[in-house]
Length: 104
Image 1 (cartoon, rainbow, N blue to C red):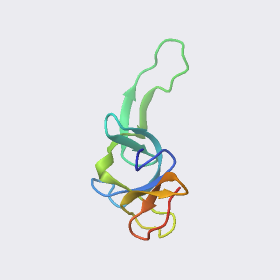
Image 2: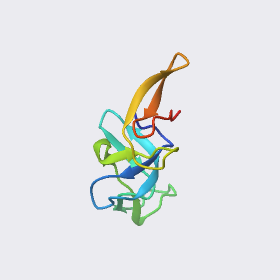
Image 3: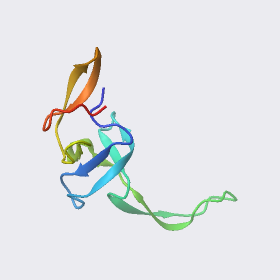
Image 4: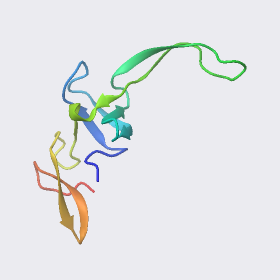
């Protein structure tokens, strides 16, 4: 079970975008990376490929961030928090270590 999932709100803790918040678009546990909306924008030079309608030119898109550089923002206390796991009604759920509330 991952501590950060798709759709969660996270805050960047290190790097050029430090302090910014965004929603998780995708996560890759194998690589240990996460893609956050509007964070770590990189420019990609893309040329047209045949007759397919692809966007050509210089496009901006989100680049991957290491999982260690983001922290989950608790919905209850609104601060970036460390996440633990606890049993709630016989089910393993995520729990904020700052305020003690269940996230799921």
